[in-house]
Amino acid sequence: MDGITLQHYLFLAALLFSLGVFGVLVRRNALVVFMCVELMLNASNLTFLAFARDSGVDVGHLPALFVIAVAAAEAAIGLAIIIAVFRSRGTLNVDDIRTMRL
Amino acid sequence: MTTFLFYLFAVLTVVAAAGVIAARSPIYSAMSLVGTFFSLAAIYALLLAHTIAVLQVLVYAGAIMVLFLFVIMLLSLGESVGPAKVTFPGVVGGIASAALFALLVVAMRPFAPVSAPAAAGFGTLRSIGAQLYTQWLAPFEAVSLLLLVAMVGAVVVAKSRV
Image (tube, rainbow over the protein chains, first blue to last red):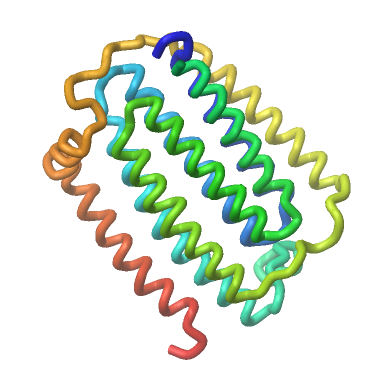
């Protein structure tokens, strides 16, 4: 890592994570909210890999692998829920889906 | 060279991630997300995580994005609701995420780079696989069970009549 150190990668990961949080808070389409969650998962993966490269041991690659697997499961379930909600409500706007809200 | 590639793909990643949030139509969001995944895979390769980079392209840019696009097509979603205007939740969300970003940067500051040389076979499929089937066997089995449950659950939830 010549010139580019651990801090550069951590900065990029922090920026990506904050962008994901911003998207989750701002966007109203449930699908886009879901994509922003994927952004946050990727930011955490980047942190794992950056620390693994900096320490010179690749144990950190295993958690990243599991994050990818869990993200796949999460995407399958989440998109199934989105289809079910769209079928019963006819909308994906998270402001209109408020049955369980106080 | 590494410096140039890092900045190139870092900028691409951030621009594509911003595109996910800014795009009006979910289709454009999904396309930007593909761009994010690909440039992140390049960043992973720069970190010598070749196996994870390949898996990133295969699983994320391949499988998960196809799932997203499939749902978008299935629900035939048009343009997103309303024009992008400055709203109160938008301002609060912006301030909150900016504060989170500042917090993360401050929290990550103490981690001084060790810059240790990569061990022999760092990040290769052989090294990852050997660890996966020895120390990480229990989490591996748990994840396989989770994927099975998710598969059954997705079918049950998305089906109109069980």
